[in-house]
Image (spheres, rainbow, N blue to C red):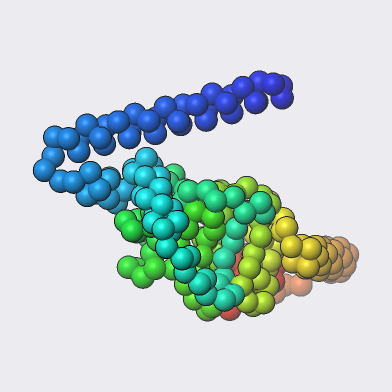
Length: 238
């Protein structure tokens, strides 16, 4: 079974490489027939979400960075990365699982992919990480970025930035029972603590239900228990 899974993965990766090569070749052929420069044509294809075009923009940006001194990265940017820090390309936006009413655009200078809601950029897939623009990102924005990071990097991630951002990320992971663990020991310990707190509350609710079942039924109907959800103040406490 493991051999079959490995073989299937190899076939999938090979098919993706062939598709990217065909897309690259198609772009080059089209560039020869159009009055645009090759760069202009690649930028146009990238804006349409073309995977090979985004990779080409990333390559040009990397070459340009090699020529110049790297810019100083802002301190404590809120970001979600893979544990191994691989310098990967942005996830092709057409394959990104984002919420309804979200849009995207490709930065033709860098190949980064911005994700927007109501026309405003909320976070950016910079390849190596999902970077948030604000220290005050809304809960649903953080959840969208977190799910994108899970799709992109897998279940084992790192979270950097302000303590508030790290704490809220851990709360979302536990509130939505996401299959995610953290590479940072302190944040992973916090996730485990939040799980224990949730389990204690669940046991307390079950005990209350058991006690209520043995008591005489009251005529007044009880309000249904709230379901976990998002509000401006964050996920309800499970």
